[in-house]
Amino acid sequence: MKAVRIHEAGGPETLIYEDAPDPLPGPGEVLVRVRACALNHLEVWATLRRPGTVFPRPRILGADVSGVVESVGEGVAGIDIGMPVVIQPGLSCGVCQRCLEGRDSHCPSYRILGHGYDVDGGLAELVKLPQANVAPKPPNLSFEEAAAIPLTFLTAWHMLVTRAQVRPGEDVLVNAVGSGVGVAALQIARLFGATVIASAGSDHKLAKARALGAADTINYNTQDLAQAVLSLTGGRGVDLVFESVGDDVLLKSLEALTKGGRLVTCGTTGGGQVSVDVTRLFLREQSILGAYMGSKGELLQLLPFFADGRLKAVIDRVYPLPQVQEAVRHLAGRENFGKVVLVPG
Image (cartoon, rainbow, N blue to C red):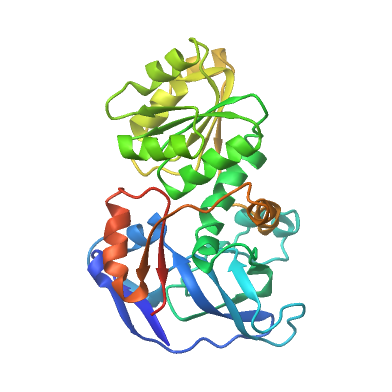
C-alpha cells in the first residue's frame, strides 16, 4: 500500500509518501480501507520533536479515520465487509478495571492511533485496529466529514458533558474557537442550551464562529480577554471556560470566571507553565478540570447528533495524501477554521 511514514523528526518534510507493507488483521481486529484521515496537532508535534530524533520504526501517523471495512480477523462478529465506518482513535486493553468502567483514557496501556510505538495510523491506504474501535459511519456524512469528527468532538464532549457537566442557560467561553476542538466545543455547548462567547486570535475565525452560532466573539490578540468577557456578561463572568491554549489565555480565562465557575482544559498549545492565584481560586470556589480524550462509549453517544444534523463536521481544507507536507504546514500555521483532511490518491 501507499502510506505516509515518518522515520525521524525534523519538520513536515520528514513525512514521506512511500510504499509500506499491507497490515494484516489478527484475531479480533478489523482492516479498514481508508477513505479520509483528518490531521490534528499530534501530527505537527510528532514532526517537531528534537530534530534528528529517530523513531523505533517508521511510523504511520494519523488518528482520525473513516473508511470501508476491507476484511476482518478471526472472532470478529457484527461487522460486514464493505461497511462504512468511523474510527474511535483511543486504544486500550479493554479488560482492566478502568476500561470496564468506561474510563478508557485511564488505562495503563492507553495510546492514540498512530501515536503509540506499536500502532500505525490512518495516513495510509489501509489501517488495522481492534473491533471495539470501529463504529458505523452516519449515512448522511461524507467520508471527509466523518474523519473530521472523532478526536476533536470526542475530546470536547468529554470535557463539556462528562467533566464540566455543561447546563442549559450557562454562559460558556470557548477559546481557540477556530481549532478542531474549538469548533466542536462551540456546537456541543449550544446543543446543551448554553450561550457561547468564542475567542480566537483572528477576526476571520471569529466571523466564522458567529456564523456557527456564537453569541459574541473576542479577539484575544487585540482585546483583553477577561475584561471583554466581564463587559459582555455585565461584570458577572462566565460559568464555564473551555480551554486548550494555556499560558496567558488560561490565566485571563480564570479572571473571566464567575464565582463557582469551572474551567476545563485539554491542551497547552500556547504554553503549559502558568502561576495560578490559589487564594482567588478558593475564595471564589472555582474549579480547574483536566480532560484527556474520551471513551468509546462517549463517541457512540455523540454520533447520533451528526445523524440528525444537530452537530456538523467543519472542514477547512482537503488535500490528497501525497500533499501531506503542505497540509501539515497549513495546520501548523494556525490559519485553519475546522479540520484539515487528507484523502488517498
